[in-house]
Amino acid sequence: MTFADRLFRPVPLSILCVTLFAAALAFAQLERPDERGVPPIDGSGSYEVSGVTVDVAARTSEQARSGGWREAQRKGWKMLWARVNGKPVENAPGLPDSTLDSISGGIVVEHEQIGPNRYIASLGVLFDRARAGELLGVKGAMRRSAPMLVIPVQWTGGTPVSFESRTEWQKAWARFRSSNSPIDYVRVSGTGADPVLLNAAQTRRPGRGWWRMLLDQYGAADIVVPELILFRQWPGGPVIGRFVARHGPDATVIDQFTLTAENGDGLPAMLDRGIERIDAAYVRALQEGAFKADKSLVIETPVEEVPIEDVLSQLAVAATSTIMVQAETPDAVALRANEVMLRSMAGVTGVQTGSLALGGTSVFRVSFSGPPAAFREALVSRGWQVDDVTGGVRIRRGGAPARP
Image (cartoon, rainbow, N blue to C red; front, side, top):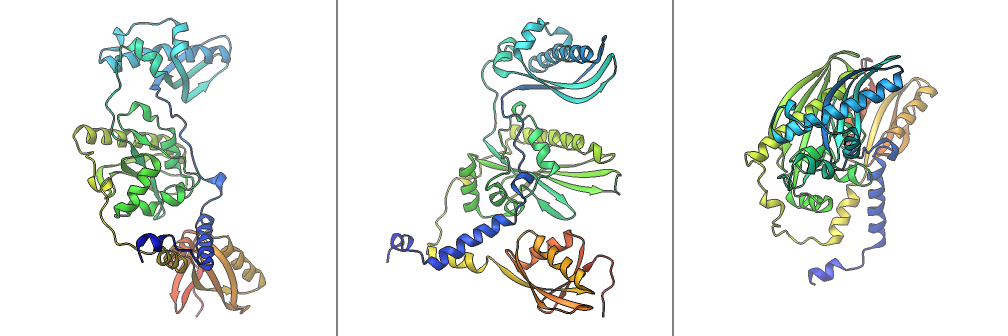
């Protein structure tokens, strides 16, 4: 029998149903659609000038704010001209406000204070690349890297997350104005199949076959994995961020550094600074020739032919794990609370009471779409203390003494 015959043989209905059910369970582990996914806020080719400070007084707050934004356009244009031409800001030619209005793409409020008749702010100004390019004397396109698929990974409490749920790190990358960088970042929104295909485990996958499929799917040629490890000193206290810029399917470290925010309110600004430094590290690597094409991502190696029936069977077997969970149930209320907690966990498809013991320890039979280790990590992340016992695990709230 040839490979084509095996490939197009009719698939047994039972195996097909189990496979489709397993795929549905995989999607069931994700957050709700409205709780994941952050589309990039700027996919245009705008020039951006940030850190433009203004201090304007007027008769009303609205007039002061309008005057501040117009002043930011004037200053932003001169700063952009100086940056592009490599000359002092004082040498930048002035432009009429009507011309600035035609080439300005928008104002980004970084920080502002509005009084009855005064406006103090730090602003960013966007300029249309096509219209402003002629006035800047820019001809031709700047040298850019090959398309780089971005998978931002945030570590919190020892658990890595990419697009499985919405994170501050993903929001920061969505805010980043990538058009000013020579690195051609391919940023995804994190919706649809993105959380399944671009999860945190994928960033450590050495196999090239799956990477080639992903790059072809998202129109990229290489991978960058910016990682963030967050440490909180105490609730409401300083937040420490450890940033690691990785590149390629082997997660090669390009640069790493540490930044600190005074509290949670300063976290977004710290993440924005971290992205700027990571982008600068990637730009240096591009200029130094470190971003060389990985031939294994474009050259396929021969693989052993595996019948599709065997693949479907393996998926069906590995789809669900049955785990025995022991928990103290002093009364019916505690029994119900444990059942509700287990059913609410991502990946849990069913909970049955295997052994009921009010006033003692009851046993629950949990069906989980994933390996037992992932179920254990999910319990720990919810604040449970988990102990291994014969045939499963025993849970209790952290700090609570175990009953003999």
